[in-house]
Image (cartoon, rainbow, N blue to C red; front, side, top):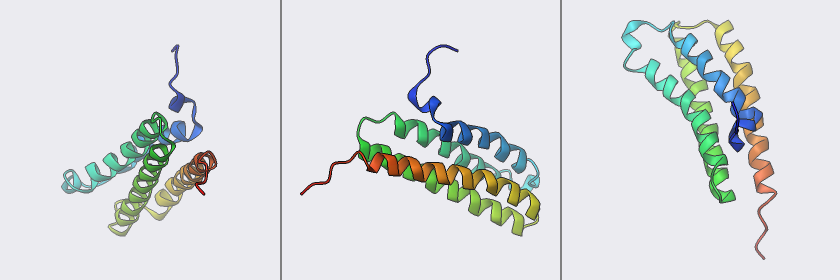
Length: 126
C-alpha cells in the first residue's frame, strides 16, 4: 500500500480497527427496535476508539496526544458499558460479552501503556 501514517504502525490502532467489525457483527444481533438507539450508539463509540487514536497520534503536542488517547479509552469503556446493557437486555449472551471483553482488555492495556509512554516524554516543570 505504500506510505504508512505513524498511527497505522501502532498495534493498538490495528487492534482497535479489528474491533470495529467485531462490534458491527455483534450489534447485528440487536432487535430492529434498537436501530435508532443502541445499535448506532455502540457502533459510533467503536469507531471513535480507532479515530481518536489516529487523531491523537497525529497531533504535535504531547498533551494533545494524551487527551485524544484518553478520549479513545473513554469510548472503549462506553462500548463495554453498552455491551453490558445489551447482555442485560438479552441481545447478546454472557459468552459473547466475555469474548468481546478480551479485545476490550487488550486495547485498554495498550492505550494505558501508550499514555504512559507519552507521559514519560513530558519534562517536569520546577
